[in-house]
Length: 392
View 1 (cartoon, rainbow, N blue to C red):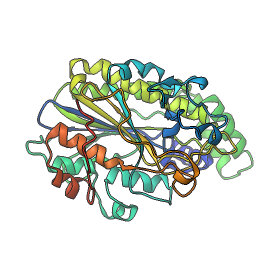
View 2: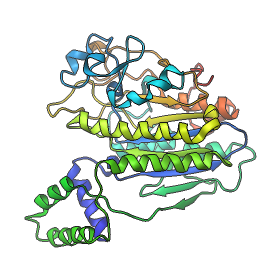
View 3: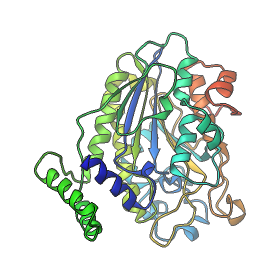
View 4: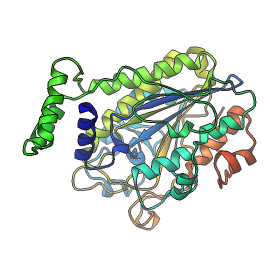
């Protein structure tokens, strides 16, 4: 109870919703016929696609972002002369050159203007058109996919961690598993909490008792490397299942909410994402050639950096795609531009395509699901449009 209380209090201190909290993580699995594999990674907290895949060829970028990394001059890895990869993902460049890494710029769910982490994640995982529909739709799009696939085995899903994966909730049978609970608190975090609760007569005793429990060894304090090890462990567990009967896996990586000190925040999150992808590639072995990885976030961030070295909740973002069976080494989609007249609501990257369309075409090409089923049942109301040809 003390750990939970401390966790909830720390969430309030962050200044944003618990949906973006870096301690939240989950993983789920499903069995399906065939040899193709799908991994969906939910990036909780709104990843800044403009920082991950930096459009340094757009002349407006340097005017909008004066202190954030902008292209090769800021240490990013040039991809195609127009886009550059964030320095924290430099270890993924061999995948790019091998055609095993790609991205879709200027994408989003149909969610607009409210910019709530919880609502945005609900829309993303429910696969619906609006947050109202997401509230009415009680299952997730991966679960509806399974319901549309013949021959799905009874061991349908596993959920692991503090957060449920709504993307796999639904009528298809699901199981859950939680590892031994450990509360992680860095030394810096401990000092911050001590300062905040110092004058709080109600919370201070409970907080001090929780820290005593940690320091007595009943819980653990870990360094910043802890989340990276967790991402590696999730990916290894996923790869182990995917090397067996499992064909669909989904897990979350949090910590993308970069309102302030974005280089540090997004750098750590990208290290976890890069570690997860490289671990999947290494541990899947020959099965990597039959695997597609989709890394999706609830919405993008503002094109302008704010006064605290970060960016705020926006609209258009980016989809990261990886795997041994994709047609990578390229941008999968068009670019709207960053001129004032090109922006959404004068502040955000204009989304040019529904991110659900990329997921839908992946399901079509991986598992042979009919487009009308995808547009009607899996992603209600979606117009898939032209096939972006993600798979080789």
